[in-house]
Length: 492
Ligand code: NAP
Image (tube, rainbow, N blue to C red):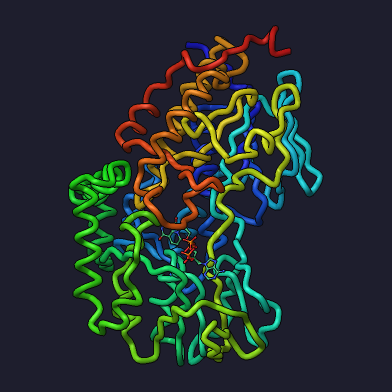
């Protein structure tokens, strides 16, 4: 079938999913693809996060593009800098620098008479027939509302603004927050600090995980035989764990969730010897309500004599350290704020306006959403990768993005073959999707009574609330009846 390869594409964001989109478009022969990136290089979250101990809790060979396997991973769970190197290598291998524009943060993106007009803060202007927003979720650091943040005399930094030159060895370190980031920081710094205090507002359930290094002989075997990589990527036990997790979160009373609860409870009971510390670490909400923490050694590290878990609330930060509400001053040289991200921003603060001047900010006034996490009414040929209401959890977001891209490609086929000039979900289908999604989301484990970045302002999870199998099925075959397809004459 004849395809128009001259359509103009703008991909916003050169993180994991933007790289995927740009490569896929170029591999299809699309001649006009522009990749806009606000920072100086690719990598998204792996570029932004450089804190000690950063790694990915998804097996490295599964957190890899299906078209670019990597025999060089140093361990089962890869360290963050290695993942960043991987994305830089893939970018170079596919010559994305030919189409990438760095230091170009999108300021506005407006649809008018069949064309998207994009401007950047640095003054670049471009037009597009199709926009792919691949701006990520976790990239606007959330500074905590703690009094005295500016009063500290030592070094204070958010985990996503970490300067690798900051001294840590022999320092008195305070880590605030115990999500995946805070736990990884404590694991990495516990043995390097003179004294480490972990300030915990709510305890976390911890899932034990074994992280084995790959030696040179194994890497050599991976290089020679890609089937060995596939055996890890598609390992039955790993896939069973993913399935168990994704089934468990949508059916909180299922055997799958009970299995997870038994695992994390057993780990807490057996992994923490001191009963006082064990009670400090015991959550009062259900496992997987917050994103599960996978850690090979957090419990061991917090049992070291020079590591403290501080559960008294933080009163304020002073020049010498953190004062807790019981009046105690915890004297510190370094404070790391592992306090998370504003997860509802997506492409914002860029100002996006669709057909008839509809503002994205207005559409998302209550909460960010998109039909099947991909499309919005009145935003024609405008698609999200890893956008709002997509699957989140303890599995590979690369797999999520690849499936989403497969769906977007099928939508784009309608445009490139000339069947229509524009495609976007219909208002009716969007409303039906959102109603069903919210109803299902309220029944997931994420809504079972805890605080987390999965929840919207109204307390409803902003996530994909159905099974991963359903996600895969939906992504494999779009229901075109749910889409408005507009011909060129009407669009103009
Ligand atoms: P997070 O999960 O949102 O955790 C933020 C932490 O900061 C929570 O413990 C929170 O306490 C605490 N906090 C926030 N404000 C506070 C305040 N004013 N005073 C005291 N404590 C405060 O953030 P994150 O750990 O950066 O992780 C975010 C997400 O990044 C993860 O869920 C995951 O999706 C991703 N991530 C993935 C990996 C990986 O290995 N794949 C690694 C790191 C991060 P409360 O719980 O009480 O709110």
